[in-house]
Length: 217
Ligand code: AMP
Image (cartoon, rainbow, N blue to C red):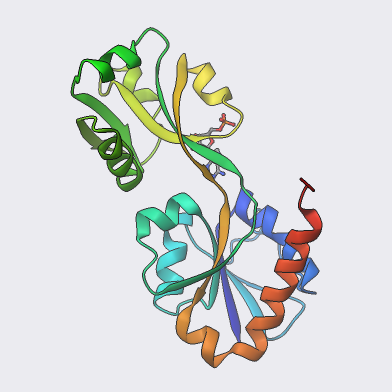
């Protein structure tokens, strides 16, 4: 049995066409079913639904053989014990620094002020500001980061930005782009060796499907 860990929403939806390319069809809709283990049209393949941040943990410890998760989540997890063979180019967005539109970020950085930064992504934020030589106090949050600067909890946030509409709706502006983010396929290292025959065709099908979708440069 091959177990694939996915999170509901964007990642699940954008992984479906890749699974279809590998001849795998998920038989239930996670938006209407309450099941956490979903069967597929292939008796040897099943999907488990976990929180996005738990995908690396499931795959690391063998609760799932494969998983799909964002580059952001992988960096925060550390990626230990995971083989990362493919950038799936799905759930694309960017990790950015944003501040209230009336906050002079450039001056604060130039003057060496100590910035209060709220984020769920503390590893990425710590490394980014350390590389710039900016002193920060990091405040760990688990959601609604946009609220932090509006309530005086922080000067800035580090968060995922896709269209920029959430920032705009909260009167925040993007002042630095830290990195581009997309989702990756992760594989349990032992499973890759022991279940090669079943896993390899899935990797190949995913890889071909991504190449076909790639925008020619
Ligand atoms: P947007 O308003 O389109 O810029 O989307 C920003 C909001 O969606 C933020 O709250 C982000 O945390 C979330 N978001 C955007 N893209 C992603 C993604 N690829 N994965 C997870 N969350 C995302």
